[in-house]
Amino acid sequence: MKTDIISAINELEKQKGISKDSLLSAIEAALVSAYKRTYGTNANVRVTIDSETGEIQLFSIRRVVETVSPEFKNLEISLEAARLINPKYEVGDYAEEEIFPKDFGRIAATAAKQIIIQRIREAEREIIYEEYSEKENEALTAIVSHVEKNGVIVELGKTEGIIPTGEMMPGETYTKNKRIKVYLMEVRKTSKNPQILVSRTHSGLVKRLFEMEVPEIQSGIVQIKAVARDPGSRSKIAVWSSNPQVDPVGACVGQRGIRVENIVAELNNEKIDIIEWDSDPVVFIAKALSPAKVQLVYINEAEKAARVIVPDDQLSLAIGKGGQNASLAAKLTGWKIDIKKASDADDLDLSQPTFKREEATFADLKRAFEENQ
Picture 1 (cartoon, rainbow, N blue to C red):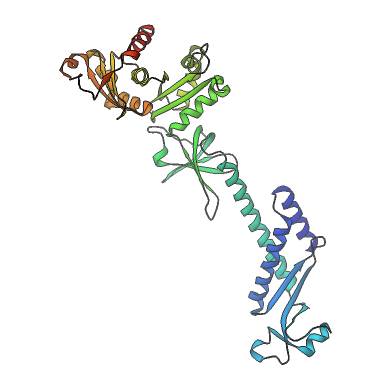
Picture 2 (picture 1 turned 60 degrees about the horizontal axis):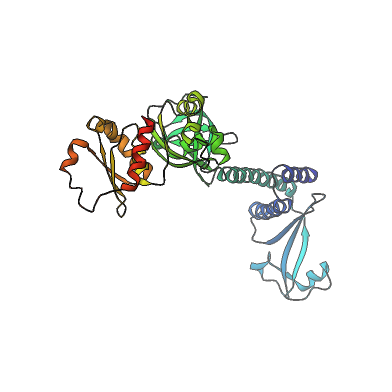
């Protein structure tokens, strides 16, 4: 048993990174508890394990007194008896004496095995927690394991994660062994294995998929400025290029649309609008309402509110089914957007300071949309 314990501890230190000293200390503490539990005693004992040979020694520790009280016979030793152990002991000292309880070797082997198994599990849990904590807010490849009442269990390599019901894509089926991309939201420590929460609906998943698919984003030439998402239905993503020679929208779409098509397929055919980001809110708001054509944008910077004028035949397109297009544009830009058709514009009191036409940017806006027609 001695050699087996040390061999096991050395292997754990090598493979799992568990400190040999901490394991030995834990086993020693477990042996003390096992001794007291097995022999029903309140005696003070100490266990040592030789780190090289694995030899286990058990010592009784008792206070040296002139006369031992019957109720403290496990805790006290007479001066006379103590000096038989070591002539230097004096009253008030603590005498240590090695003891050899019957069957303690078997008890020690069982306790040591339990501690080693426990520490292996703890180490594995900690390794998983540390590894996946570093991957929070990243996209991972997952394989569907099975569906439970509270969500979908997926395999993530070394461990499992869960897609809670609120993070599942509407209308998406999760069949066993289906390979999907998920967004790692959070890793929680529990009394058992870490709980890893992943999502199929998080807007961060769209961002990470574009980062994985588009080399220009990976290199930093193209940047993702904002993402707005209605999971399972439609997303809008605003992109910008630091290089005037690189079209950010074209880079994300890819040759013959292959890049964006790969992402759409991964998201269960969710539609994606790719919009060029602009530092001018007037231009950005107008572009965010794509595919609708915008005539005018009036903004109130203090309230971050915008009034948008569109041709009459573009109103339903600008608002979108159930208000989806307008809602996504508002999320993407961070502005409150009120859309009016051109025929109603005459009824609006645009002289009020609440909304002000931005003359300097309107020319840019008009030119940009003429170029896109």
